[in-house]
Image 1 (cartoon, one colour):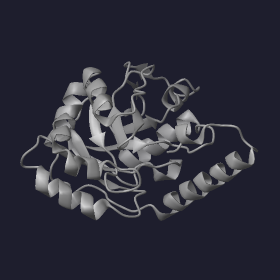
Image 2: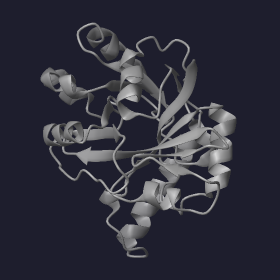
Image 3: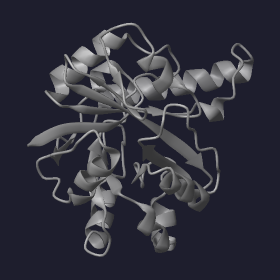
Image 4: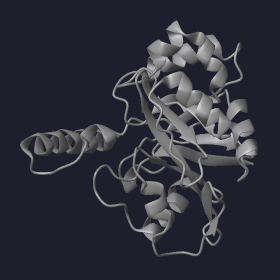
Length: 253
């Protein structure tokens, strides 16, 4: 059975996390039964804050929560801001954060934590595509390349070309993700995985085997990109003016 899976979502930029039930209802609507939604932290605790909100009964599996009456799995993730670019890890326990700044060190820690390791938007803003080209030995750590990112205004075409060059030599799958910062972007992009399960090792296996992305949903979310860009520019401006006090670099998503 093929399951709609959207592993790269932030749900919000700098605002409060949305209502739990409303989010789950939308995930059910957009991803269908057994849908899987990744909720990705930066250097924050948005996943933990979200799963502790009031709402539907849920089962905490340590690195994910399952909502049985809606048949939706929400899995914890983190986008790590390394010196070489962004790295996405999926399946961390809710209290885990990887804070290492060197890409290879972060990759080793993610592997030690049995996480699913993904290269997000590798040829878009702060992607690690160039690093992977010049240092291909790092590809051995990866389970997937995000070959289509819903908020990437450029780079997806180059990523697909790169993936075609490496997929025969490395055991790496291809993912399409929304990278959304709003509820309406849930499921705007998704990957059709064959029989993914709640167990992290079985989910990893499904991801690594997914090399044909022709049936995945791939769409550029112009409104989502515009909204996030506007919020980011505004946040930077207010931060510089001292109107808000925060370390912007720690929250840039």
